[in-house]
Length: 206
Ligand code: MD3
Ligand code: FE
Image (cartoon, rainbow, N blue to C red; front, top):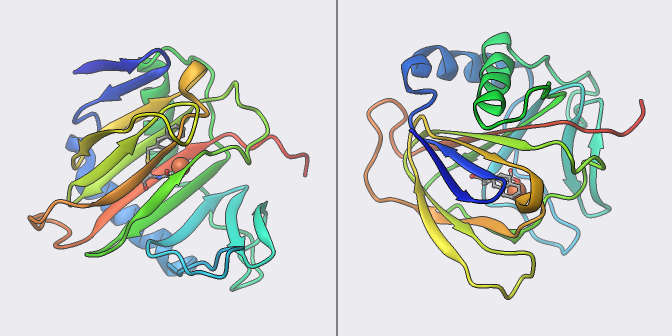
């Protein structure tokens, strides 16, 4: 089903459920080329979610700051390409949410285990905020925090389940959001792990 959470934010529950096996399989293929790692933050911490990327641009956090790069800093090779099944799914979801011409060139993959979280933040490193962000959740249920334009705005919590796809654009594109934790139940396909895959259009000239 298609649910508008607020103007610009659309939840497509179970949009990806039928492709679950194929999606987990291509994630494992990306991981072979660009392993998950816990990135450092400019504040001196380490992210509790492990991350990797695919596509022309990958998001990198280091003590020096946040940036998009064309190469994996671990391998010094280009990030692996976005698997066709993933980029097709992202385009279909964007279209279902009213964005007809979304072709992602960056894909960030977050891996959560018990105790992982992602604090409230905005995604504003992409330069072209007219483009939406499409997010796919797989595995264990995540407890998604969804706020407003200001850090102190009221936050709602939404359970993101295996196969759910969210499309954030328009007036909601710069809203604060995060993950406060995971539901206790393991998932039959991924056990205690949750994956979140976000698709973006990064407008930095290369
Ligand atoms: C709302 N990921 O990778 S996905 C991220 O579940 C990120 O791993 C979370 O926040 C996760 O940056 C949340 C849902 C999401 C993604 C991007 C958004 C919600 C968003 C951008 C703007 C507003
Ligand atoms: Fe985010």
